Length: 248
Image (cartoon, rainbow, N blue to C red; front, side, top):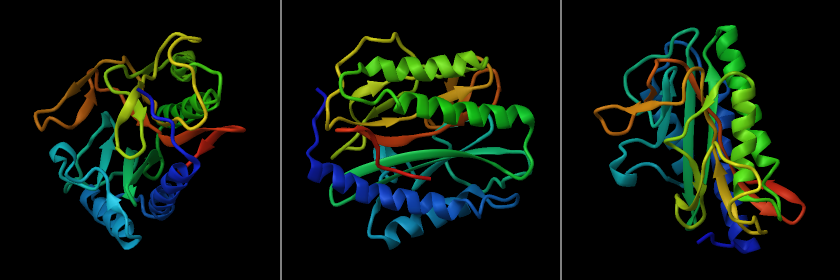
């Protein structure tokens, strides 16, 4: 069942989204070679807790950190640790916040210093895929219109949309119904209605869409070792179109 959120509930999610956005504002000037992913996670946690929010990922099904930080071939759920960023890396950062009982969730992929043209194109294509999906987040459209728009953007550029991991509904729980795949048939799926809220999150691989999960049961990498990029926003179906509750 897809829950319809009231305006008051969506405003609470927007407040949580403001903390998420504060994190990404801070990270813009910090992503440099030499920084460890653990240092990044500590900074993220300080910002969230300093704003009276709760890091939504920490402890979720036993996840050990406040953010997911995914380097290069890591698709999602990279666990922060001692690994240092290197010039030319790409790094996906996924952040969730709970505030006053409601959640917001967003992700951004950064380049570290000078990155390859291949990496730049993958990042830009994934970002465009996110906004293509968001553009479908309107009353009267179908859920898989979002999915189809993302898939079309990814495959049109010669990339692939990950199938094993998807976006989701979000509200008073971090993950709610429905799943929001990054591939699908247009004009199918549940009808979108005002008050529905989704975490839309294309994960786009430079090679094939197949992935594997590491022995830590969290870290997801591309099966063929290709680069992967990840962008995400929390978006409500609004009266006048998509209402984005998070910003970078």
